[in-house]
Length: 258
Ligand code: NAI
Image (cartoon, rainbow, N blue to C red):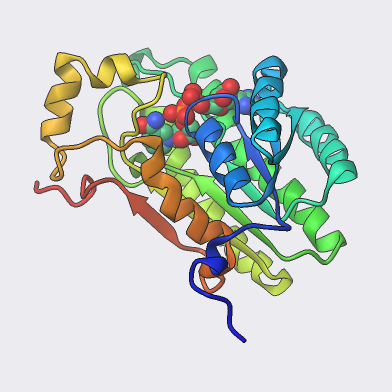
């Protein structure tokens, strides 16, 4: 018999890797996935923060473990996946780690470009390919979710390398979806609009932030929990028919009037 609609969003028996899990959207997403029944591998550079989060999840009855990961280094990604797979075989990957450098185009340096593009684009590529290799080798069906941004499709002043890297993430998603479909591995991207996290709270609540909010047709910034539905849809059996898609979660910001 078919499972009920709510059951199809559950993640019991699944193993999720979340990169950049120590703060913001990654932290929220780790709690969400654990709550939905997944075992969660928390991966980032800040192992102390991750261990605290793992404790929080375990004391609420879930399963989680902290793993050190620098997404910009192939050696770190390989080592991290060796450790994760000896704990549990991943079936879900949330490529969430990301950074931005805010400066005008003419002030952006080679180091700024390398930091942003290595983390946001190369990092997504390294983690997704490493995850896919373990899934293919163990004949495991999987779902890879890349955190892109509406800035992968539109522009704003001051964050050129960031916007360029997120446009790349959208194409990584589509090309990987094509090549991995034969292995039952789905690859999708989420394009959030502005999401209030510790990183940007001060700015979004400033006068400039208020001006920005007034340009969003829904007149609201997202909270991390606004991403819950899209993440669970793409991660679970409820989204089994979806691969290569880009899910926009932005209160109509991308379709704002010119
Ligand atoms: P955040 O700064 O709170 O989280 C980013 C995480 O990535 C941190 O835990 C950080 O330690 C980790 N990280 C950075 N470099 C890393 C590396 N080399 N290796 C491993 N981990 C690394 O930011 P936030 O807001 O939670 O963003 C999460 C993702 O969502 C990013 O990819 C961001 O671009 C994307 N996003 C955020 C939006 C927002 O308005 N907050 C809007 C659209 C997309």
